[in-house]
Length: 369
Ligand code: M6R
Image (cartoon, rainbow, N blue to C red; front, side, top):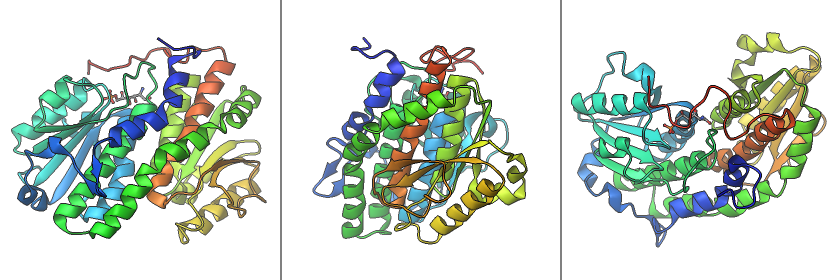
């Protein structure tokens, strides 16, 4: 079933261009989003939504965090993300103007399922983003938008993550049309960006060898930090999660702007830090701030590995390694920047002789609390 690949994870990482393409297939027609699965949500109802609460766990929650930036920017509706197990044990404020969007690859995560049930009991309407046809969470939701990443076998979620972002972006653009917050032309521009992602993912994958080498040099590393800003922040969290679960290395992700509020105290000579650098073209305000963060940690001896757009020369004097991603609009960068981080964790796991597909203590779907 691995089709010649040494692990399911390696196969699934390589299938990411296809996972995004298949999730978009048939859903973009004449530069418009078409999601028949959402028919039960009339346009009036979507216009009446005052707030979106996203519930998910682990990697799925980071897909939700990425989508928050896009949905708020495009559809001008507040989006909050909450871990399912936190959500269901407090008294969240929900009403029939709250839309609850759950994200789950397996569609069986117990905490997310219970959170969806709870939300419905409280009168909220629910949509699930799910990769498994007929799973329990979609059955318990008012509507489901399936990701078409294909079966994900490795415990570490990879292709499901990029497919979740693609599906959430489609939903965000659909919402923007219905709510009149973007023009047809603006929606078409975003859809073209989204449709260009699979090809760009191929280019990122073509650079895998450089990431693999880096991981092999770093096989003895005991702690790695990840920094990102805006949509790069959830990618930093995802990079850290991948490294913990696959290589059993202490890893933490931070919002780069938080550095001075504490984390910079962790920096000592030799400390590896991955920095997800926003595009100098697309994020003219944030790019210099992240570059100055890089200078600050470098001055304290950090070993900086920058994930930066092709042609971004500003990082060169300060980064020890630069992993390049193709040019993309800011909201689409996370779909590309996550890939080197997945590969880094996978290769480090392999370099340490660990089981990449089945890390210790973990299960593919967490069907217990
Ligand atoms: O099946 P789900 O998407 O609901 O699973 C959620 C998390 O358990 C999952 O993403 C987990 O964090 C992965 N092992 C991360 O790689």
